[in-house]
Image (cartoon, rainbow, N blue to C red; front, side, top):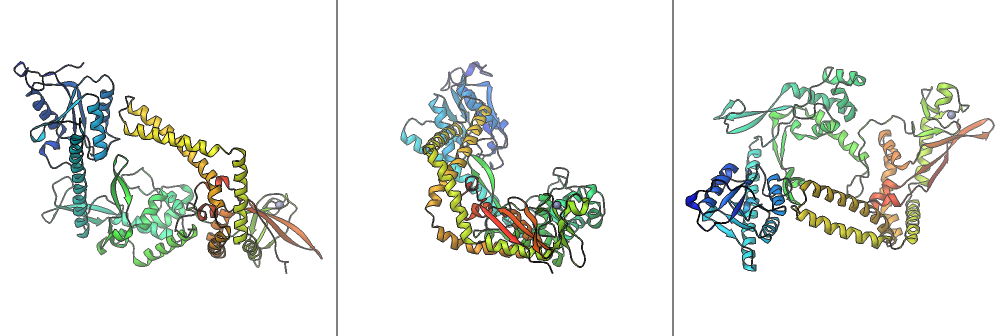
Length: 600
Ligand SMILES: [Zn+2]
């Protein structure tokens, strides 16, 4: 039992006599309603006055405080977790005092749940604001009244957020800063129409172009529109010696100081953000994201639909001229298209942000005799593919070369004829299904067993998350939750694979064939488009490099025959709308054979 402090003899009587109190105090930016909520020290002081004037005492080691913690946050609140721990372990107090029950939280379900837990342990809960009252939950009416109160608190939180948002939107519409200081600009504080130094009182903040950084921004745009990838640009800006030329051309050479707040170097993601930032083109865009409460976490950032954005012209903030901006947006759009979106606009694969080779099959084909790379040789009158080991080292006997354009078109023709057909695609899916069916037949009880385990784990996780103060330390609890969640993920992956069979079995393969025809057609178009896009598409199809074998045609004439193995993995994954399918449905069943036309 802790030490009761400052209990005066004169107050050794009163309604709280015999009660040993814990205090919980919380402060957050959303609290403006009560003066009292503006500081936790003040909340604790008031609580003490309230308790002691009624003959109770506050335990010195049971003062639990959370500074700057939102009422929607239930996970990252050390003060609350400490209190709940004490509640489970030893419980030296038999009463809790707060200024108001919204200190526990402003989420009505979670708050009520916590209150119920506390009261169930036999701890009485008092709030001192508005004359003071005891929270009683011993009958349904009392519980209902309590939930109405917490509903009020939750509603108030929602309204406060809306007020903040309205105020921010108002500011944005006036071209004022609502947060952040993007690279290329500085925030200038104004008071009474005049600039004032930062840290001084101000009416509003306005953005201004920083010419030194604006030049770097233009350098990034120019480099990107000239065909450089984001990774190389980032490396050049970080002073990587391999990209010294690039750095000299666009950034004046040497290392470019990175934006002050971040990690100390430039990253491709930062470059990417800048290339898309409409502010550089003189437009303030506000409201692209908003904050919501999710799973007991406050202020989780989520994207908002584009029709809710507010766009305000700001010509004085334009850094990038129109034509350069257009060029960059065009390249971004073209690159995006390369990443093969399906009908729902979902990416088929993660974008690769690098420069592609200039020849379709360079690095993607190998010599049928020695197994080393086919390379492109600068022949005259045209470039040719040939074995690198023959031509560069002289260790392979395959000296046959053939024109790049001829080989490419023969290869693409075969691809379109043999691989990118709906029939072959459906066949591949069927083969994959058969394989999973075999697996299922071997162990028919696997799925129900997995389902059962998963359901059990889900219940367990829910219990653990809800009962944060389960008596174990929060760290141990979180670890256990993480472990259970990892297992659930494993189970889900396996279940999805097994579930694919009945789900896909019920699919009309003929219908799939029709549906994919268009997609495969687009793929074929990609392959015929520019080489960079075609290479990316090809890489998604190829399992391994294509095998080029010289064959005799008689009359001393020779040509290449090629053979390759392809997968529909990337295509299947999205078209069938089932995640994790490819791990079970392997589609390496497509062979590709072809022959280059006779030379001459
Ligand atoms: Zn060779």
